[in-house]
Length: 246
Image (cartoon, rainbow, N blue to C red; front, side, top):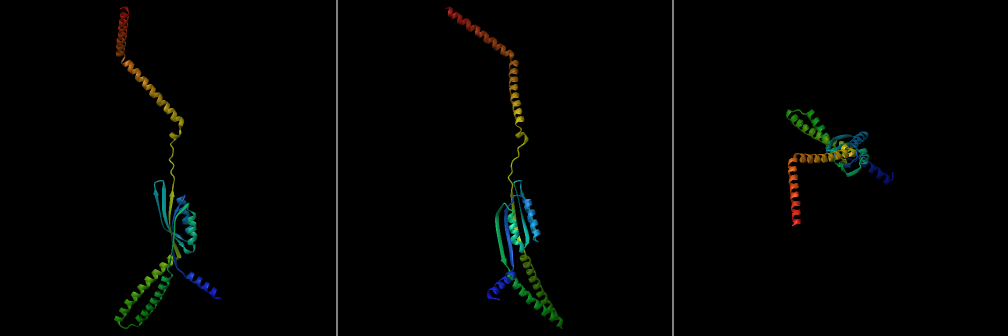
């Protein structure tokens, strides 16, 4: 093959063997919170992923929010992000992080191979050990090596899991515009008009009733005042006529 084609094949092989841990953080404003969460869960299952964590918070009736942590196969990582952003009315935050752990994994493989070789030698020594003292020492060394092997294998499995399934953390916000509801009596103009008319009528009747009660209840006193006024009037007219004669 030409050198250029060999270089391309080598680059592809290195890319295929590359191990990268992808993590994404999204903050989305959505129109319908429940529908969006359901759609994201269905998308995750469709791609072979799952929901690792989920929570919902309600702030009265005005706002509902929640968060989801999903594990998505790396092959569908970007596709799922596009689907998630497509569910949003507005993307508030988008943060994607990739951590290349290829070198660490290769180093772990090398260390594991070396420890396996030591384990085989120690097992061989145990078979040929004649003294109890030698057997105990070899057993202690073997236990130590096997413990190191378990730690290395555990780390390798963790890296394999993290690179095969990407982590997507999504925070969702749904802000509702609350419109105060008008009560029926606020909308019934005719009923309100009749009520106001009756109130005004009652007020006038109450005033007239009070006036009648005042007049009738104080009638003797009013008669006396009227008589006194009439006498004063007669006296004034008599005095006026006398003055004219003089």
